[in-house]
Image (tube, rainbow, N blue to C red; front, side):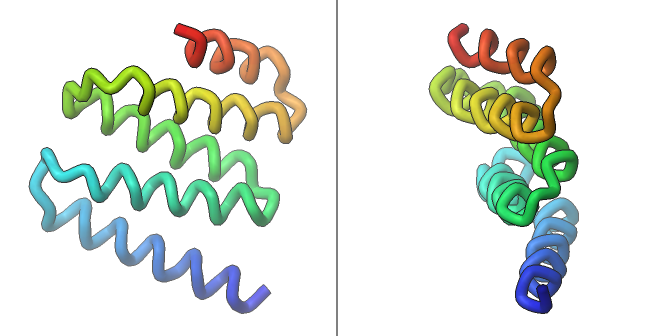
Length: 100
């Protein structure tokens, strides 16, 4: 449990610093959101995982990244988290977005 809390703390600190100090076009914030979402998901907190996967996908869209495969991956991750949380309608919506 302690390692989980420490990991979350450092991920959140890293994100706070990046949100303040990195260029708007820097993709590292997307990676940080994704990493944090994975930590939450690994520990069963699907709601927070979904929140950070969505932030990553939103940031990718804001940057105008036309990498449909990247958005597809985030939609799949969001769908899996919704499925794990028993929210099948939301999951289906994101599975369909992933199929594009």
